[in-house]
Image (cartoon, rainbow, N blue to C red; front, side, top):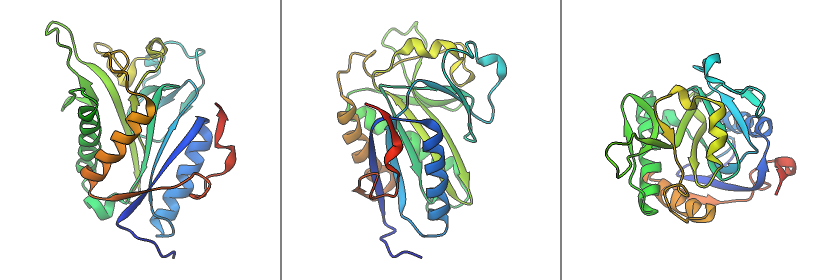
Amino acid sequence: MMDFDRSRVQWITSSGLVEHPFSVAAMERRVAAIRHQNAPELVWLLEHPPLYTAGTSARAADLKEPDRFPVFTTGRGGQYTYHGPGQRIAYVMLDVQRRFGSDVRAFVGALERWIIAALADLGIASEVHPDRVGVWVCPQDTTATERKIAAIGIRVRHGVSFHGVSLNVAPDLTHFDGIVPCGIADRGVTSLADLGCSASIKDVDMCLRQSFETTFGSGTDLVSPAAAGLIAREAVSK
């Protein structure tokens, strides 16, 4: 058992585009280490190359263009979602049992509040709905429907979480056309850029870190991927 401060969370930002299979393998290793108290909790910020992922509730009919991008089956909750450049992925590996007991819904609620607070710092008002997963933006035109700006899909194993959230900063929104995002056909997607917000990925990262510390009541320690034990082959392109 390693000696580290369990009140603090490591915070890692990867450059380039990280392949999905590598990220899943890295999360698996870290979750096992956290479970056995051999590593601190971790939030990992990254971007993926264009791809679709299928959660445990994914329906085949919701994959409208199966040959458009690589498709990965994953153990997280939820249905189909898109990941790609311009979207900030935050993989969250926390000791949910210690923080929330067996109340996974409380953990998801904290993730939602985290994203809503970060968006508020960027000047974007957002909300959640009990009948729809994710974080949504209501347009000023009251005749229009809400649009999703962030998706949430997690898995908890032996009390430790992995996978996490994806926040649309400035992705190509047409890439969502190949799926029914999260199984919701009557609501669209949006992004910070689509809403006229010029915040960069670095701006978003700063707000995410600040709001995480407030929401979860934990300090964060910025470390490099190498220092956290992630291999150097993480990035596939710049």
